[in-house]
Image 1 (cartoon, one colour):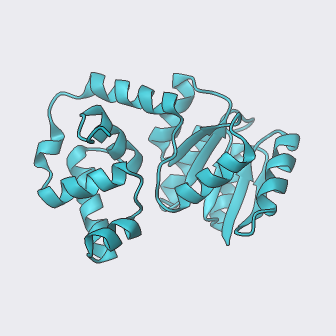
Image 2 (cartoon, rainbow, N blue to C red):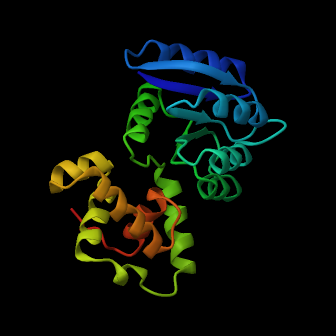
Length: 212
């Protein structure tokens, strides 16, 4: 059962999303918060599998709440669900540690699928968000950091770009899950990024991913 905390200051949004997710056989909304400060306290108390985080809220916004949660619980998987694609919303949220970024205009089924994908280790990003991150990294990139990757690390990065979770990679390459996690950690360090999402964006920005 996927344990979910829903954070949104609009009651009707919470009611609608919660009702749909509760109807899913593998999901359970275990808590709701109406602002970022309340979200931090609730998430750190309940330690859910997934946090659905709104961006624009009173007291503390989604990016601020995400940053505080990650600072105290780095394993948290936070999925931004918002109506905004502005730079001042996208960048702070992802830099704070959010795994996925989807729009409220997505239908309920898409959000449920994104929850499952995020839990499995995939970064679910709106196409425009991916483009923004690629552009920003292109502007700031000065040297080919990926030259430092070993052949195995490069292979694992390509699988990450295909949306494979750590367990999927371990199964596909016939190696231990612990070994995969070590490789992923090395990849993040060598590419000078904070999480899998940024590593995948880097791979696409550098044209490392074969075009299909």
